Length: 279
Ligand code: DHB
Ligand code: FE
Image 1 (cartoon, rainbow, N blue to C red):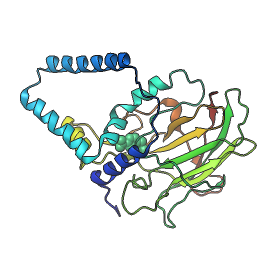
Image 2: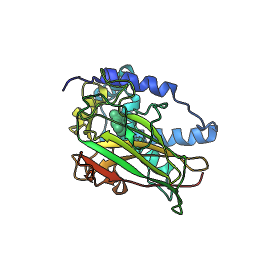
Image 3: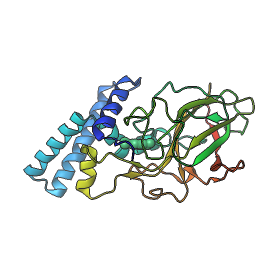
Image 4: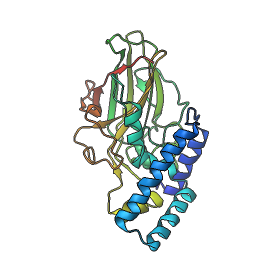
């Protein structure tokens, strides 16, 4: 491994990125806040009774909660262990493309590249080349021209640009707009599985529970068009490590790719289409 990503680095960066995120529409109604807070606290009280939590364990919990904040790891922790249920509830009525969690490593404003060209990458970017292509349509299958396909993913060592040291700013992050036929294509490098940083408080939690800290290799996408619902999703690779055992529980059967050898003989290619729900 050429660089060592530290939890302190990626955690703090994820917190800074979250602080810049535009956030609207949170509940302001005191009755709703009270109902959710009451149920949350009652669930916690029940767990304490059920497991007869000791004072030593209560103190360990307080110390750990303080440390997660100090490490800047709340975005990591919540996106791994909680976001998948928020996504399930938010997108329950969707009929088109299937979504999943966004995770903590999206950065808006990636360079716009020509469809069919290469993602920003290092001249010696490691890995298996991948041609990722498809068509954006509406629910009836009519191609959507001018749709935005925003792709970001980890490199062949499982690290994300802007969150691990030593990687160029927009490496393996790009936006493509679909043509008149609704088609898009990216040339990229297949990502590796992603390991939750084990040197921070989220890693300490996973180790203490005896779990593994891995997510399967994945592509992240946001696909949108005027008059359509934006879909945030991820795509996985059939047969890859952790596809059936994702620590973030974000894999869905519809999101598993089956790439084949590329027609031009370099690496793999795969086609995946997105049907967008009306806004
Ligand atoms: C986390 C990282 C990811 O790459 C992802 O897709 C989801 C969550 C995380 O570390 O929280
Ligand atoms: Fe990810």
